[in-house]
Length: 244
Ligand SMILES: Nc1ncnc2c1ncn2[C@@H]1O[C@H](COP(=O)(O)OP(=O)(O)OP(=O)(O)O)[C@@H](O)[C@H]1O
Ligand SMILES: [Mg+2]
Image 1 (cartoon, protein in one colour):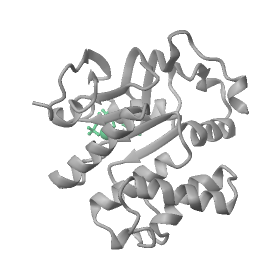
Image 2: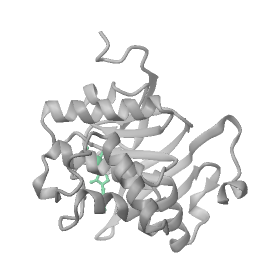
Image 3: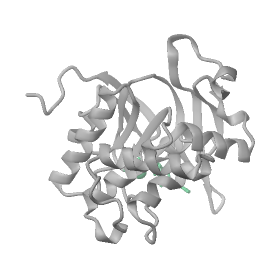
């Protein structure tokens, strides 16, 4: 229903960043984290944001993800200027449009996998039965059909991250934002998470993957490289690093 009211940008950019600046103020000292960025991400793209520690990756993800506001410049999501939204509207917009995956999983420790995945659907006001069905479906799609009633502490790291992916996917977000999703995982579990992200991309999801690891970044089809709060590269990947 609400999609009728939302304007689409020409070229179907799902994310547009214009003149973006973010300065933190710490004990009266300015810490510039993003010093002027412009770029677009199209619907269905799989983009990595890479760069060394402190280059502004997480800050950028927070701004794109409507978790924080820019000092100046704008972020448009599906053509909507998110800086024009009030706090409540911003939170609602975020819940509807963005699915987050974090390095540290951020699952509720006392809730089962199923409950963790159902939670964003509760916020969306989806009825209990439907929400249960949807949560089961997405957990099955990430290979956790037999782990739904486990608590996070009863799951491996890779399994916990797959619950987090299911939770991000459940409300059918416009964009999936993943900040170092393999950072806490061993190589095999990390590869499994990257495989799932690539599969989601094949299913036409839009994915933004933040990482400082070159190998992980190269799993996407495009890499935006940051350094010191600026974009220093924006390249298409022609051959995925796992394909030869
Ligand atoms: N809340 C904050 N207050 C003050 N400075 C901050 C804050 N958050 C980040 N910074 C600074 O902003 C810059 C960018 O930080 P950011 O967390 O975006 O880097 P990053 O690229 O994600 O690094 P990492 O790879 O280590 O996660 C850094 O210099 C950091 O110290
Ligand atoms: Mg970071």
